[in-house]
Each structure stands twice: as C-alpha cells, then as structure tokens.
Length: 336
Image (tube, rainbow, N blue to C red):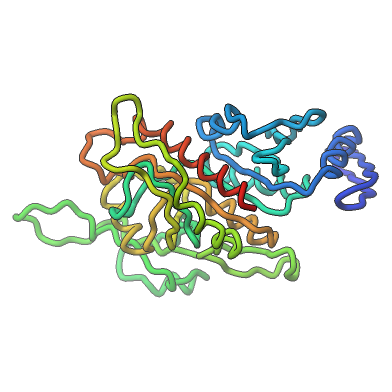
C-alpha cells in the first residue's frame, strides 16, 4: 500500500493524517513546524557555502524543531536575524537544486526563497569577491545539437526553436596562419527555453521560459546592500580592491563548471551574463512556477577560465566568496 497516499490536510495548520510514503509521525512534525510559520526558505548549494550560516551567531536553531530530515535532505528550522527561516543544502547541480526547492515548497509554509552561494565571473567589469544580484536568470544547458552540415531548418522540424541563437563550434577552431577555415564536426548547438507548468495554469499545458525574473520587491530591497562589509583578503593574499555588492542584469546556470576563457567570453557577449553557476536558474524556475518570491545572491569566486593564473582561482578564494555571499544574505534578510 506504499503508493496509496490518503491525506486529510488543512494547509498551513491543524491536523494532517497520512498513509503511504510520508508516515503519520512525519506529517505531524511537518504540521507542527508549519504552525510556527510562515518561513523564508534559504537554499544553499554546498557545505562550504552553508558553513558560514551554521557558524554565525545570527542563526538560532529552533529550540523544539531544529531540523527535519526527509528524502536525503536536512531542513534546518530556526531564525536568521530574527526572521523565521528553513534552510536546506541542495548539493551541486541543477537537479539537486530543483529537487531541494520543490521539497521545501511542497512540505513547508514558505513565503519566499533566498538562494546564495559562489559563482564564476564572466564579466570583466567585476572582480573576484564581488557579490552579484542578477535581475534575471536563465538555464543555458538545454540545447538542440544540430547535425553536421547546413541543416538549420532541422531545428524547427524537430519541434525546437532558433529564437535564442546558437554556439557554432567552428568559430572556436584553433587556427595557425597556415590553416584554412574548415567546418567543425560538432556543428552548432541552439539554446532552448525551459518548458514550465505554472501552478495557476492548466495542468499539462506547458509554457516556455528562458529569462526568469527575480521578485521585484526583493530586487528593489537589494539596492540597500551597497555598504555591506565584505572580506578582501585570504591570509596574506588580498584582492586588488575592496569587493562590492552590485545588482546586475543577468546570470546563467547549467550543469557545467566553466573554466574556459572562450566559453566565458561567449556567455558574456551572447547573454550579457555576469555570474555563472550550477544551481540558481533551477531554484528560480521552481519558484517561478510556484509563484513564490525569489532572489539569488552570488559572490564571484573565480574568473571562469579568464584569469592569467594557470589554475582556477577558486582554490584560493572559495572561503572568502562564500563568506561574502552570506554576509550579504544576512543584511538582505534583516531588511525584509
């Protein structure tokens, strides 16, 4: 009878009875937690980004329900800057971030979602340590990969779109002065929008979304974050200037750790992106479909392959960027 789920539930309160995948004890605990809500949900990708929160005196776990474990996730309940929060570490990748966000919104009484962490920097106007807050996020990992040859019409005939443009691999062939221009067997990839199913839409009737906006009120509040104190040194290694908090136009996400100058430059020139990461757009898409306010705060930990160093800068600046992102989150939540 595991797949038979009988729920008698009054949302955001009172009694819940369940038989099936979620047992009665768990539903009772969820109900007790939700009775103390609503909460601000905080989704953080990895342990090194979560640690500044757990080590901060600003975060106070709930005295009766400090955490709830479910489906491989630990949902930490407490207060951050005296605001009621539920914190979940998603793990790396779009899949994990989307799953964690969906569980957060399904199980708990959440009125808004804040996402923070580190990111690669694909915009030469900014430096490592800066904290970026994009107005829009896009998933740039959904592609139509065109076969070799001049077959662009195959995109539409296969049910996909050419609206968002492409990456042509032959543009990145490594020529010498004696080489002649040749096509690349990898041809082109065409970027595609996500198919979404909003909660206020008709079930199984899809809509398309590429650039997902953050919440307008949250983005306006982010104007007030310019004076947040940010770290600029790791031991004796210091950044060229003091890091800043900046609202930017666009950020991009995909299941790709970008450490390649050519693709870094492409993401900036093609999409006007500043941070690139592996989770934010997934969290944004889930919240967008659920009509839940959302914003992401990403501190730049490396130059995504665009630096002069022979190795990625994240090995040095990971802890600094993680702390800076958290410092901005703390200030942001205090303003809500």
